[in-house]
Image (cartoon, rainbow, N blue to C red; front, side):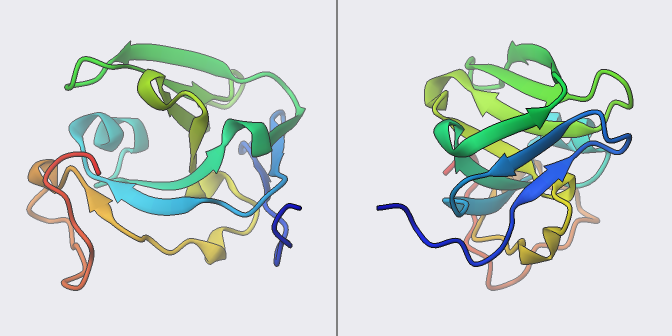
Length: 140
């Protein structure tokens, strides 16, 4: 039997063309400070909500994907709305059963609480990482 959800996890892009929901609670949350995530977000890190792909339901629209190879040589993809460009989710070919969804893509992202910070070796000097954060020099 699945977990009882305590809140609705719906979201989408800025223009409303893409809509999604999680059918189960997220399995993790964390901030990635790698250069690729900095470029993708335009900020110091990517606040990600990790979900099983099987728990993710696309309700409306079709995202576009950009694929490349990570610093570790793994094929990775980022999805975005083809109309407004809003980032939606990230997938790594090594863990292709998981999505890392941009926390800001949720209708109400106030539930987000980072459990760890990864790739802190790439963190910018002006980026504030909580002193009590669980940190990893590269990926977890």
